Amino acid sequence: MKRLGFLVLVVCLAFGVSASPISPPHSNALWRVVHGLCMTDMMLSGAPAPCLEVSRRGGYAVLRNPQASTEVLLVPTVQVVGIESPDLEAPGAPNYWQEAWDSRRYFEERAGRSVPREDIGMAVNSVFGRSQDQLHIHIDCVSPDVKVALAAHADEIGEVWAPLSFDLAGRTYRARRVIGEALGVRDPFKLLASGDPEAGADMGRQTLAVVGIRFADGRPGFVLLAATGGTPENPDGASESLLDHSCAVLEQSSSDVPGGRAFKEAGVG
Image 1 (cartoon, rainbow, N blue to C red):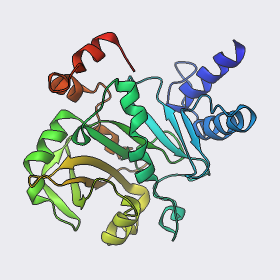
Image 2 (image 1 turned 90 degrees about the vertical axis):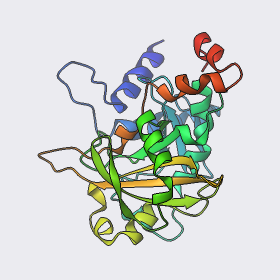
Image 3 (image 1 turned 60 degrees about the vertical axis):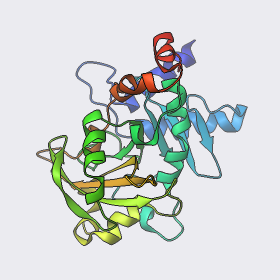
Image 4 (image 1 turned 135 degrees about the horizontal axis):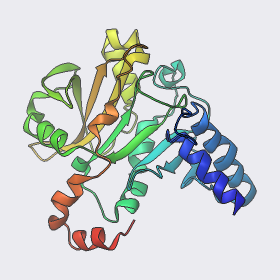
């Protein structure tokens, strides 16, 4: 029982929930959870508690957010401080975004249903928009407004980075498309750093999101969204704002999925 209480405390600290009303979250708490708890338990017992998975091959762990009903995080099992880390751009670096997309099954388990690709978003916040100094990719529902806007303007988004003609969550984003069921070797970190020189010169201030989509011609793919923002004085740089942790898109589309509303009402996931 004491160990369970300790796990809950550390996980809550990792997700920015303070132990007291005045104490800030610890910026290395997420790393402590993954490295100190999940990886240790995996080696000792084969069960990666409190993580959902630890992949030695992929070099990542998947962890639920106890403060959200569906969100999960993908976290490297080596220390990678954040989007600004040069290790992410090195030849042969893992494509954590593809691993995150594959890990959406844990998000779907929490949602209690299969979720269409266009309802799923992933996000990494900038150095000024995060509470943790360990890279983590948020995986959750996309905001309904973002979903509608991207679908309406999908034909305007090409294969090179360009500003969108409309705002998302009150911010102007740059976007590019990627065609295919999966990202494969196409790593959004590398695509941003190499395809946008201004961003590549200051990756720490970049915030990046990847949203599933199905284009008008029926082809599946992704929209990559990047914005520059945040300073120490104005810590605003979070593409996580494009996600909706209440998952309203699932309520809107539940009637389209057999048993979808029943799953939600039963609290499955």
